[in-house]
Amino acid sequence: MRALRHVFLSLLLIGSATLVGPLAAWMNGQSSSAAPESKALDAFVAEQLKVKGLVGLSVAVIKEGRPELVRGYGVSSLSNKQPVNENTMFAIGSITKQFTSACILLLAEDGKLTVGDKVAKYYPNLTRANDISLLDLMNHVSGYPDYYPLDFVDRRMLRPVTVDDVIRQYGTTKLDFEPGTKWSYSNTGFLILGRVVEKVSGEPFGQFLTHRILKPIGMDHTAYEPDTKGSGFARGHSSFFLSPPEAAVSEQKGWIAAAGANYSTASDLAKWDLALTGGKVLKPETYKLMTTSRKLADGRLTGYGCGLSVGERNGVTVLSHNGAVAGFYALNTMIPSSKSAAILLSNFDDYNEVNTVFTNIVRSVLPQPSDPNLPKIAGLPAAEEAMAFFHRLQTASVDRSELGDEYSYFLTDAKIKAAAEHLRPYGAPTAADVEGMHERGGLEVSMVRLTFKCGSLKASMYRSPDGKIQQYLIQKD
Image 1 (cartoon, helix red, strand yellow):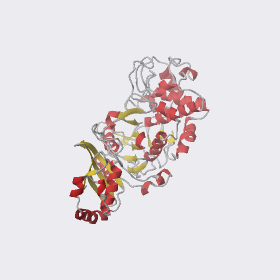
Image 2 (cartoon, one colour):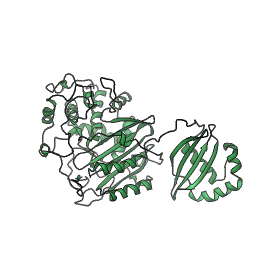
Image 3 (cartoon, helix red, strand yellow):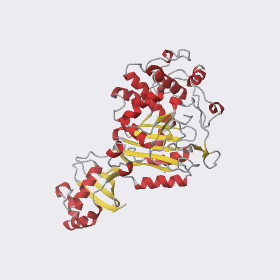
Image 4 (cartoon, helix red, strand yellow):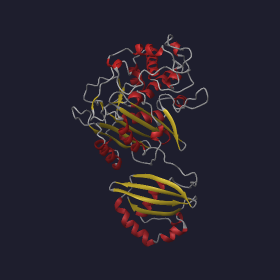
């Protein structure tokens, strides 16, 4: 919601890994306890919660469409000490904007509006309403002043207000810039968009959102402007001048609305991420519009689509947003091409500390840097080949035609027999993590972590372009 409530992609574009594991039970609404968790990541989050003095966290890490980690940490409130579980709902602030944009785009698919509609069609008395489109609002290029630019709840927000009153106050003043010439984050535009959804659909925004998006996806623990007095909701906390966390003073009704009034869980947001990027929410051409960086009048790209920051890492699209309201901070990053996502929700709005935790969490889904000299290798991807060859070592069934001459000479029958004895007790790997890949001497060099029920091992695998293994060594992790 506030001045820093849009995501900074530079924070997120860091190192990564490739993780694997199963999903069906979780997506069917069953407990995520059956899904394999990353023990190291789980331990890291639990430790950081204590070290950084955070209150509660809801975390989800999804890789290749499967849950790597889905759970809650800490407490929902310092006053009641109730533990956070995967169904505890947190305010997600401006992550709401991607839902608001999707509602507008669904109405466009229904033929009930167009993204090129001018604001004047719905609010004719607003400044330059004939020159500003709904798409301009979704892209933050309208020029309407932001009604919530500060990082604290000011006196205005201590009293309830109607959304139309806020729109009237901030939508009838002088624009900050000529429409389409600059990008500037504006919550005001999303209040307008929410009211457009209501005017066009004839339904309250929350009702339209629920039956068109939340229910079809199975987001049973997400709600718009909910009554948060129940036990299933986290309470927001803030710190002032390095004080310990204390209960935050919330914005009153009408100030947040379609710009940031959703509550959700990390698990539900993971479902949203997979549904949105998997084509289950919008048609392909509409999804493309939502996730395309807006081009300004002078040709510059803003790095922002419709309620989403749009970036790229090593040729792979990264969609992100953060959000907050008083006492809460939330981050969501998705990688459409790998069906991966990382979500962190916090009920303590210490942005620096929460960002530090998220930076480590998001490493597990972001594509890792690639060596431009990396050769093209025939055969399986590195992670799959590493697992397959490990199995062949375990079972002493190595096919020497798959090995380079020197490695075949080095890997004597005695070594294969010893390898089977040492490796067989580990059982089949449950996950593969490609921690690094580079070129050396014309070979693909892969460092792969293999995870088992009893622990993990590291494999150093070298392959030539013909797919033959030139080296495969195992070490304890």
